[in-house]
Image 1: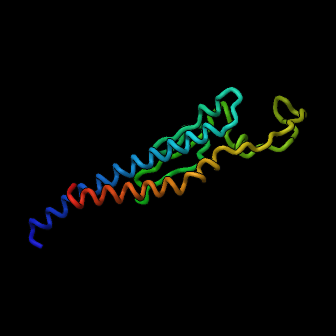
Image 2 (image 1 turned 90 degrees about the vertical axis):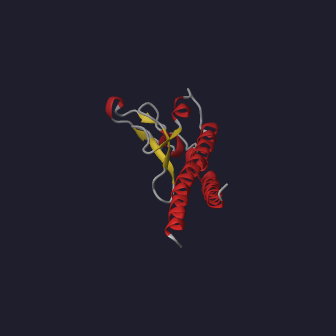
Image 3 (image 1 turned 135 degrees about the vertical axis):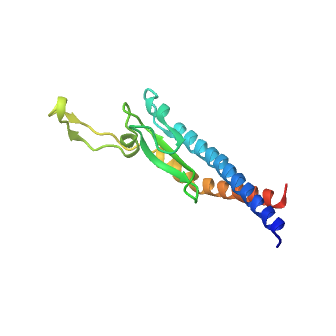
Length: 151
């Protein structure tokens, strides 16, 4: 291959890296939104604070939230974090429930009856995890093929 051919391949590879990154990002966003929507539909609603705290972001979860899952590109560059809860509501107590116990602190000695588990977080994540991975893989292959074929 002459220098002109090598330069052409290098330019194409650079375009491919960018196209693959963008395609993966869009596919991951779509998957995260599907998971979050399912979580919001499944969560037990009292006053809506927990439902409203459910979301996703690129990078780390907001302070006080519980990170339930993440979708990560194989290169580690793109990481979507799915989360729920905040300083006002505790997602893990709804997801896993709590056992009956005696309270400490301000209400010391009073009995807390506990609460049954009402799963919404992990079931949503697990039911969509394979679909999310497949969607991202398809998007990456399609973007790479499109650049390589020159379309």
